[in-house]
Length: 278
Length: 246
Image 1 (cartoon, rainbow over the protein chains, first blue to last red):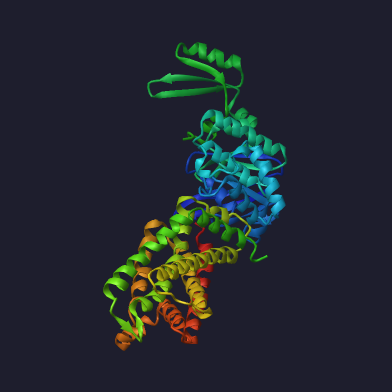
Image 2: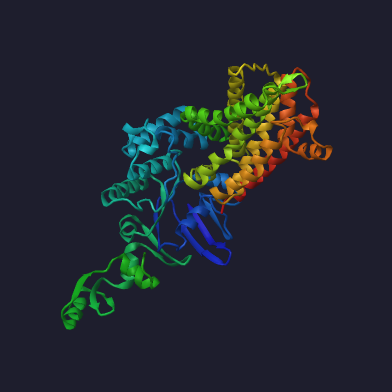
């Protein structure tokens, strides 16, 4: 569904995306995980037509983004990291304009608006101005708007950034529901737990390049099954073990001041990229 | 197919305009009222040009200037959409052509210009100067607005922020407003100055509109120049939309 081959984006001497290649099959929820400035948003902006690529190729649903940009754009919906709604229009008007841009007829626009605002639990606010919504509501409206034209691919760029824990979990539920309804979802995030909870596969992105790509479980198993964290004078160090017994034995030999726990995706990220997610 | 999406771009602008219409009309009226009072009533009460009062002379010029400023105001709306609301991304990510986008914005600029000119004519009537514009007057308004709305889209696409936009307005629109035959008859200037000022599209709009309301047939040259400049700037606007992608 999404095929990217040696994608590159340069801004002068700065390389934002450096030869990324990947294939996301239909129906998959794919997470692109990396620190701020890793190139996550730039990749989405290239794929959705907001930024020109410097090299490589990409196609969405079989449409090359350079040779057939209109065909590629028809395939996808996009929710940007920042809010990009019309504050002076109502929720329904924002949905309606989007439907018109994608060539939907009046009856379909009205029906789809009612359906999707119900889907994101904003049906009772349809006639309100967007400027009256909270941050979480705006984020849900952006997701509803992106789904308006029934895209086969949904790009979500940091969909829960800046939201509180409760709203974040509601949006996670919504994203899972969208995947279950048949869409391919390409998600960028720097929240590791978000990728671990939602994604079928995760790519670790750092300085514009993919450092590792696999299922969350497979990425975690590359590091180990159990870990213990030890506080030292210079900070915290973590050791990884294939099973609980060996981790417990090492911890016992170490003495006091440690924590024994299961390995998670953050451990995999730190180990495989040598970085921290900021 | 090429124009698919044009309606969405235009309708969005019109819905926003409708929601802000009262404020917008008040804003549109402030400058013309000040010009009417300062130049028309206070300074030019006794002056006559070719048998017309200064207010009669001034009003078509003010209408031309308003058509220019209102259609050029599209640049501010696009600027807000690009750099503040980021709604421009909706258009960039939508399967619409650059022609549809630019035409939608230009048509909204022309609509704003027509509303502004109607307001000027109303203000003139309120001060006792009733002008009866004919089709040539309105054609000049539309062509003038076509030029400046296209210019607005072009400049809004190549600027990198609000500051650049304000700078361009100061250098392009403000001099044109004062030198484009709005406030004084150009034939009182030296020939070299007239030649320079005839390079400005607003000069041709003002002269065509003034001729029409004074019951004369405007020169065809005015319309040809406005249409030609408009087509050239529209082409620049089209070319610039793709460049707005970073």
